[in-house]
Length: 94
Image 1: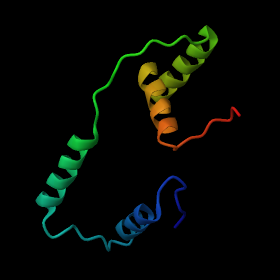
Image 2 (image 1 turned 120 degrees about the vertical axis):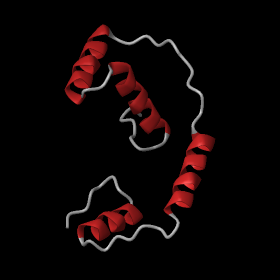
Image 3 (image 1 turned 60 degrees about the horizontal axis):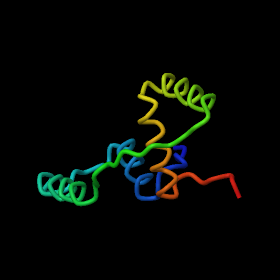
Image 4 (image 1 turned 60 degrees about the vertical axis):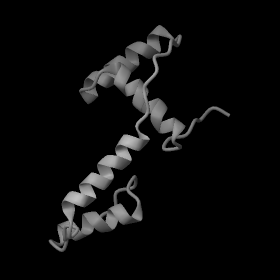
């Protein structure tokens, strides 16, 4: 099976086990789901509105890409900033 570059090793193993029909749910699935729900509640932070000046041509290109992705353009911008802030994408500006 081909690996998916953005998945870590644990995620790759999980996908492979599902494809082999070897995946087994945790013994207490309800407790696992509650633990993950609690973790999400602890890590999600309140959003804050900001104002930023962008080139009009960049905004138009971002809007076009957002349409192709089927998401609002502000969601796309927010996602890109979140990925950059969490080192999931890097800047080519040096």
